[in-house]
Image (cartoon, rainbow over all chains, first blue to last red; front, side, top):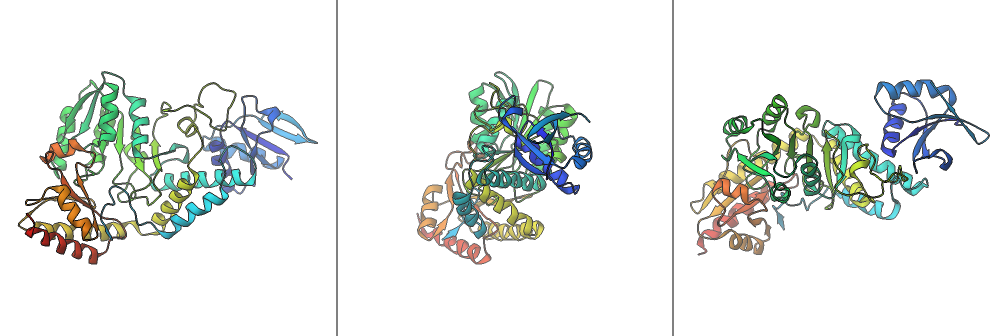
Length: 83
Length: 370
């Protein structure tokens, strides 16, 4: 059950992120960004487990992959989190 | 048919390319345009094709932009770097895919390095001509007419030293010779998918060392409320729906290249090219353009037949070659063959020794034609 998400500006960035997380053994899934969070129009995100979030962010930063906001998802409600 | 027109298009493809195109037609929707399985699978194929190309050409996946062909990529590159009146330095072996966009822009062309098969002269000419007013350098890696391998690595080093952006046309080299975006630190490297990468026609790749200006604006599937194209690569340069059957086939071609031993394949093509050159050079009625380093492209002039008539006779004997100017009048001007053009023989991984022997026999027989 994925309860966290990392937003990306483009699908290719999200795919690059997914590839790097996969290499690092962090499970994630590429999905469309919920409309409520896509303030500039359509976007993509990686869904993952909350316990993986800090590790995932670290992998992305180390590899210079830009990402957008981070969210937790609980009962369908998205809350932005900061790391 | 003996197919020796691979410098135009490799007609013989690995069978998995055809299978991949058929698969895409049935299963792949628009990548980045939806979250349903057919769109997500298309997005996955698109990214795998970027990654495969990035691995082969020493780049990052985001630096791989899919284009319609090399001409499309060269237009993006040239129109990103060159403005009207800019001085642009180019080799004497450039294709019209380079010359026409530069002419249309009103660039001032400085042409250098016009001696065939003389890399020392080419490097010296670039070094002498690369003065501070030059805004960009464009150089083909391999002449599409003569197969001359230009010393791109050394020209790239000159450009780096002098801080001038370099555009490489890798139309004839991609898939055959090492091509490295990072190693050359080129601004752009353009290539077709349908030649040495064994993909379908309508595909191409532009490797981007810099973020280009979009040649077209349109939908990208992301950031849709923006009135402008995304700043990020590759989306910035990929407006509109992708050619997924083509890209899926291109991925199969790239996978074929990765599975094959590149050095062995290259060495086999080099051996057959040398055999063809030796055979042609031994005929009194043939002038063959050969030297070192030469890729798998060979041009010849038959003293008794114009190039189009010679190619027609070869076609009647079941041998496909290309005659004329090969869309590269500058290269013919450099070699002194602008008036009649040449007959061009170009090989691929699927060319056999038997085919070379048969071709030489037919060219020998053409001696009797007037």
